[in-house]
Each structure stands twice: as C-alpha cells, then as structure tokens.
Image 1 (cartoon, one colour):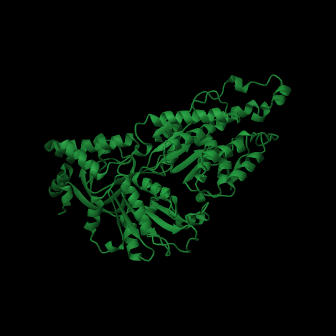
Image 2: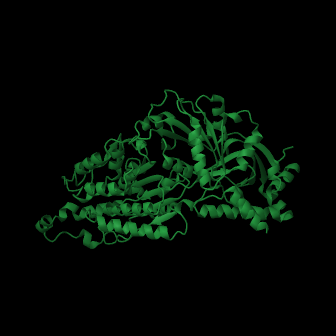
Image 3: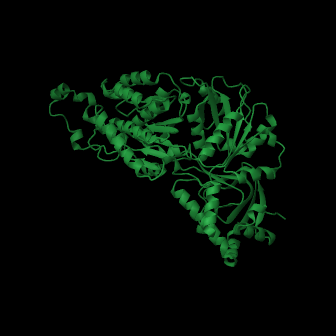
Amino acid sequence: MVTLPDFMADTALARLFAQEHREGDAAWFSLPGGATLYAPGEAADYLYFLRTGRLGAFRREEGQEPQFLGVIRPGEPAGEMAMIAGSPHSANLVALRDSEVLALPRTAFFEAVERDPDVMIELSRLMIRRARNAGAHASIGDPSVFGFIAVEPGKAIRPIVERIAHAIATLGYSVTVEGAASLLAPTEWFSTVERQHDFVLYVAEAEETAWKHVVGRQVDRLFRVGLGDHKPPAVIPSYASGPLQDQRLVDLILLQPAKVTHPKGSGEWLNATQAARLFHLRENGMADVQRLARVLTGQSVGLVLSGGGARAYAHVGAIQALRERGVPIDFVGGASMGAVVAAGLAMGWDDGEMETRIRKAFVETSPLDDIAFPLVAMTQGLKVKARLDEHFDDIEIADLWLPFFCVSSNLTSGAYHLHRQGVLKEALRASISLPGVLPPVTDGNSVLVDGAVMKNFPADVMRAFQLGPIVGVDVTRGRSITADDVDRPASLWRWLWSGEWRKGPPIVALLMRAATVSTGRDLAASREASDVLITPKLNEIDIRDWKAFEPAVAAGRAAAALALDSLGKPVTELRRRPSLADLARLNGDARR
C-alpha cells in the first residue's frame, strides 16, 4: 500500500488520492526520469498527483522555440485543466527525475468530488492561480532546485555559489547551499530541505565525483562552472541526468578575471559542453552575481528590439529610459536594426558610447549610398560591412557580456534563422540584409536575409530562453509608408542635387516597409510574450531617414518612460513568485 508523506496529509487532494488508492480506483506507478507522462493532443482521461520526484512541462508551437513552462512538485496535481474541460493536453509533461505518480480516472474524480466538495474547491483555487499565472506569462511552477558543478580544479566554486545565495536572500527568499557533506543523506532529507526553502543550491567541487552524480539527477536545472581564461578540458563528463540533457536544461557559467575587457574563447566552451545558455561572471563582479540571482528567481529582464530601419534609433532612447529607472537588462535580442542596437548593449556600451557609435555608423553618412547595378541588390553593401567591422571587430556572440541573440530569415528553408553563436558582425550582417536593398548572406547552401522578413519582433523567441519579465520595443506601429513616399521624383536632377538620393530611391522605402510588415499571428505572439510593450510614436519619421536620430531617440525615451512609470511596480517584480513566507501570511489571512 502506497502512503503519502506527512506534509501532504492536510490537503483535500492528498486525502482524496489516499482514499481512492486504498479503494483501488487510483493507480500508483513509477515514472523513470526522462519518461513522458502525457503529450500534446492526448486525451485527458486522468487526474494525476505527484507523490515524489519532479515533473517538467514543455511546449513547442510550430515556428517557435521550445519553451520550458515550469515544474510540478510533490503534492501537486497535473492535467487538471484539460481533464475538467474535456479537452486534449496542450503540453509535454516529462519526469525530470525518477518520480512516483497516482492516476485517478476522470469518472472516478467527478464521483469523488460529489462526496467531498472541498476537493473541487481546493482544485478550483489551484486552477485559478495557475490561470492567473498564465495570464501574467508566468510558468506552472518555477524551478527552485539548482546544481552547480565545477568543470575543472583550480578554483573552489562554493564561495561563488554562496554569493549567489546571498543575492537571492536579499530578494526576500529563503535559500540554502548544500555540498558533498550531504552525499549519504537519505532521500527524505532532500525532500525536506527542498520543501522548507524557496531555493536550494547544490554545489559540487571538481574532485567530488560521487556527489556530482547525485547533484546531476537531483536538480531542476544544472550549471557547469568553468574558468573563462582557460581552454576547456579535452573531456568534460556530463553528470547531468538524461532529462536535463534531453530538455536542454544544462547551462554554463564562465568565471572571468576582474580586469578582462572581453571574454575570449567562450565558443569553444559552448561547443565542448553543448550548454543551453552561457553566463559570464567576473571576479568580484557583484552585478554579474545579482544577474544570476535574478535568473534563478525568475526576475531576470529580457529586452527585445524590433527592426524598423531608421526608426530603430528609438531603441537608443528606450534603453536610456530603462537605465534611468534602474531596470536591469539581463538578456538582449532583436531583429534587423534592433539587433544592431541590442548587440551594442551586449558589448557593454554605455549611453554615451552607444550614441557616439550609432551616429558614426548610420547618421553622419548614409550606410546605403554605395549604389550598385541592381542585379542582386540596389547597394553593394560594402559600407555596411565596413561599419560592422569597425564597431564590432571579430568578437564572437559567445564572448559578449550579456546573453544575446538575433534573427535573420532563411529564404532556403522558409523559416527564421536564430543566431546565438559565431562571429557577431556576420550575424548582424545577415539580420540587416534587406532583400533588394543589401545583398543577401549565404551560409552554406542557405540564403539569409533581413530578420524582419519572418520575425521582426522576436519577443516570443526571448521567452524560450528565460522565465523573467520581457520588455519589448516595437518601432513598426503607426503610419510607415504613403503614396507620397513612392512618388516618382518630379525632377531626377533636382533629386540628385538635393542629396535625397542618399536615402535611396522610392523603391527602397517600398522594399524596407515590405520587409518589416509582420503577419498578424506572429505579431500577436510576440506582443503576447511581452510583459512591457513600448511602442514609440514615429509617424513623422521616414524608415529611410538616417538623419532623424534626435527625434527618434526622443520618441523612444518618452514612450519607454510612459510605459515604465505606469506599471506601479518594478519591472523585475512583474513575474515575482511568492516566497514560502508570503504564502504562509496569505494562508494565515485567509483563515482569519
């Protein structure tokens, strides 16, 4: 006979499953780590209840990156919404570690709740909470157990993990760091520690091989920790459980010397570890420690910048407004010109350097006036290439201080292309290759053009990489092109003499606007993924007007200030999960 842990006994759901199991209606079974409990489209004929272990929920929609929705912990149900609604499941539910599950048939559940209405009341409260979380873009249950494994000897990582734990505690959560002294602890000890703390951080030093294996199968997400100024070892054992590897829940932290200007060789580490995400942590770098604390607690901020030609100058103003209000930026991504501005942010440019470099690259002289005979494009693209060379050199994406991505459009496959590794300037060159305006970029047999063609506002892509709030800046809204913009010049000579030709002929405006018109479905998905949506008023700025820097920056700054000041709470708290102390207070208030 299967019994439930004592801490579950005071819930109506736990009592229901215990009784139904005794009577033979609820089946108990073991679900090995990596096994799937249910998949999208399958009939929801059972209500599940997790006795021990951990389940992870994942969703992958067509044309989008896989998304980690969160975890289900012991004492929590699974599949309740689909079962009650009588609809198929919409996500994959996978065992992140060996788990024990109870399953109650749908008919038996409805018969049971007629006898004990408290079950439906309790389940309804849970469903309402999860529905509200979904409406606020929050996950089912955020990961709370993390592992840190040293890749190589030479530097103890426990002091670093302790600093991360201290930063988590300052955010109002209870946290504990546990090491190899817990190697021989019984299974129930792990369950108790994880239940009594908001966050548990298990840390294994390089020589603690047996403990590494325990950590790798006990956590919701694993971080390997390496030395950024060293080459990766020839062989790096995984230690991560099969589910963590299969679902790409293994990340990499590279420790960097305090005075390093830019990391180097990080791409080799990524290739050696196949990590899902990479974070750089400078020695004595408190800002980097705080960033990791936000990542672990679901309070990291992702910034996404859309394409939009010269209108993308507004992103510079939006970033200024974010910085003025102390909003941290932990992940950055974008498309087309938005990708260029995002790359500057990931490089570590402050406001002054950002403005100086953008002015020099795009404002002082047009980047699109090296006109070519239009066999493939209307410009040669040499000026754009030279400016990317000047401002981004040969830096690789993996060597940027912030996690960064940009998108281009793969005309060969008919899908967007995600750039997260490789040489930064080459990724940017692909992302800004407006069809017909700039020559395309080839990658093997693939032809890559401007990311705006297929994914101009990739906020939904950002959601796949982090669980925290997303700030999106979309510069494509409002009037973009009118009949006046495509009128044939009355006098060709006057048009040339006035310098208007440097913007490109009217066909350039037509091509640029055509490339940045998103489909309604893509736009809705991206805006839905944004917790804060900033839409500067740019009606008076031509998409080709590379001189319109000041008004575009001012519009971006004003729109961002308005959006941020109307929130009523800091951006980092938009997805804040309640702590155990918060829940205890809420339960106490409810009883009173």
